[in-house]
Amino acid sequence: MPTDCPRTWRVAWRTLLGATSLLIACGPTVRPPEPPAEPAPPGQYAPSTAGKPQATGRQVVVGELCPQGAAGRPAVAPLMMKQLDWIDESDQVAALIERGRVPRFNVLGTDGKSAGVFDTVGVADVGMKTSVGVGTYTGASPCTADAGATSATTTATTTRAETAGCAAAMLGCGLALGELSRPDDAVETPRFVTAGACLMSDSLAIDIDGDGAAEVFPLAGVLDVIRGPAQEWLASPAVGTQCTPSFTLYDVKLTRPAEPGKTTDPKATVTLDVLGVLDLDGDGRKEVVLALRFPTVRTIVVYSAKTTFTRLELVGESESFPR
Image 1 (tube, helix red, strand yellow):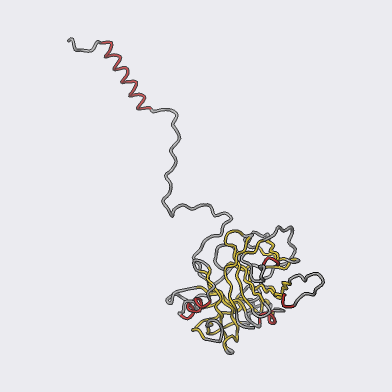
Image 2 (spheres, rainbow, N blue to C red):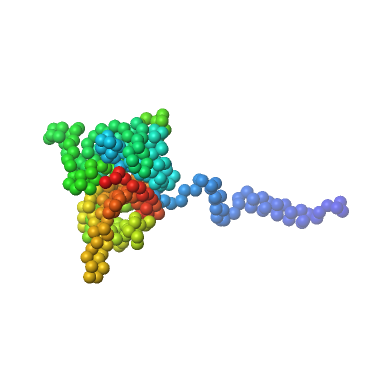
């Protein structure tokens, strides 16, 4: 018919269709790269945490136990606490103790091991700025350290021995640590990873990040220009730290250099005591708890490596039991 396609066109059309079908069936032999994956929804992205503190939900309360702090009875002075952030309003800490949120404190000895436990029953007014926690204390003096087994055949019980210098510096008191809990939670004794510090010339050597190499913090950096606790304490480069760390150190003198031709004023001397080096908030880095004895007051401070292990930040400061 006049409208029929010529034979040659129909053959060419069939040939083209067959080639196209073959191409579709086999596909290309070289494929382009896959498009990048869709970004994860907010909250599911986990960046690298190498060299960064690990966030945890641990809520810890720092106090100081004195065996005779409340008219001859054991008492814990509330100092500061870590929830989402550090809080050093001691009245807020005392309010939590009063409500039964801190049922037990682990009282550490001079070696960083548990010397005893303090179970709180309430608070009492002893003439301080805030109320103190009162209750029962079971254990040895906080000024003691593990002296080994009671005998060669018995390892279950150990004896504890007094640490030189602790009684004079601490008056028998020591670091007490508790965790926030709910009234229906089982009462447990909190445990902490401890470390130590040592005096190296005019600096403190402390392994903040636990890598086996100590960071060195000059003693001159712990006080600011008005002789108060510095807001930050920076480490200095160190080569070969040669000292043996211990959990506590006492009677480290921070003396302001005398002006030329003058003698050192005793009132310019601040005495530093290391009360403990330990990981309080569970982020993998150690906090440093210090007592600073000024001529008229004694204050307890906590330094934490919040951003980097070479920079300690002042996260809490509170007055302790009067001396």
